[in-house]
Amino acid sequence: MLKEKFADGIRLDPHPHNPYRICTPMMFIDIFYNCTMLIALSVVSRFINQRWGKQTSAGVILQGLLFGGAAVVGMIRPTVLSPGLIFDGRSIMISLCGLFFGPAAAILACSMAIVCRIFQGGIGALMGVLVILSSGGIGVAFHQHRKDHTYIISSSRLLVFGLAVHAAMLLLMFTLPLDLAILSLRRVAIPVIIVYPLATVVIGKILSDQEIHDQYVKRLHDSLAEKEILLREIHHRVKNNLAAIIGLIELHQASVADIQTQSHLSELSSCIRSMTLVHEMLYASGDLSRVRFSEYIQKILDHLRMTFGSSATIVTDVDISPVVMTLDTAIPCGMIVTELVTNAFKYAFPEKRPRSGNDVCRIQVSLRYESNTYILTVSDNGVGIPPSVDWRSTPTLGLLLVRMLGQHQLGGKIALDPDNGAQFTVTFSVQHQENIHGQ
Image (cartoon, rainbow, N blue to C red; front, side):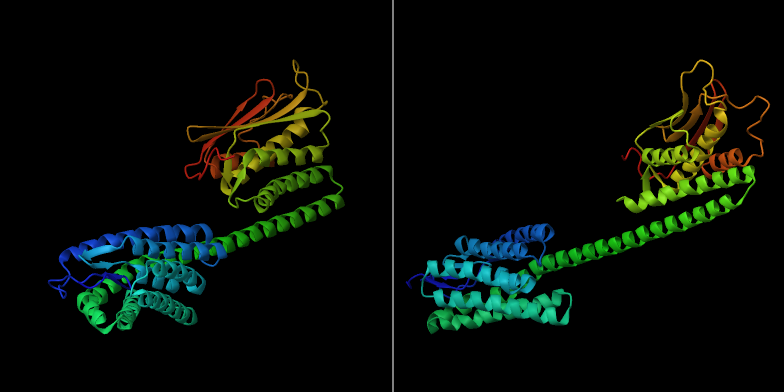
């Protein structure tokens, strides 16, 4: 009996009775299990790509360690095909490491496998080292060719790649003594040239699909980033344009002597300002499509307090549920609040005093969200609306705008409670609101 000898991926102890015995079907079952382990390792490879990236030093080192470790595990725990004939997947793992992750990862994987192969020793040690180097070299060569020509690794290319790697493996068997080389080729040439390239295709296709997916995700992220920059710039420009309109109105207001006209222009400026605030908040926030409504309303009230100079005599309260709103909802709500609070500042406290029975002049804005319905309330404890005034049909611009925005744009209902001042309640639902309770 010949002494046990090692070839690349093969440990030979020729059977004394039939040294040319071909592999049994059990071989393919064992190889299937071996490939299953390699596929599992490809999943770990994807995790490394997603966590550290292929182009980073950490990612390259980890990939080299992973594939080199897989090669070493295959060499220590090989697949037994028949007594004295054992395969492992080092050529597959090292070549794919070079193909997908480049020279640095391949050198690391090859170094680990070579150390293990030299430690194993045997007459086939030289061949084993040469096959490791050839597998890594072919992988790096294909990697460079792909880098220069920029193509997707298809199944057909992977098959050609696998055939090249394992044809080189078979040729290197001639570095063994001639009788052992011929024996090895007769026993393993057919499974090596058929099964190993197919296993290379399977595992390589998994890695290729992962690579394509990662590239697709990266393009999506880049496209999203570009759109966010564009949308942010749009909000910025809209805000600047509205600010320019406000400036023109204020210039015209300063040149008009009529008090009533000045008042109308001031109200118009406040309405436009409420729209400007939305775009200003969106430009400065991380979410370019929705605003925190409580913050938005607080800024409107701060602006109106400065406009009317009533900070010392009138208290403004905000009681708003933590909700976020889209522009289509927030802007009309903001304009409604602007109009009603403006009316309260101008008319609710004619002598800077609250309604009888109250200690302080107070304007309150609240919003509740219940059962897919918004309830927006603007109230004051002032003199209230005179009973002779029908707010539903009055031609005044402010209340007309409130009715148009509440009933038509928001599709809601408006109610007035005249007890203890004036309390307007706008009830509406938003069927397609993307996210409520998001603050």
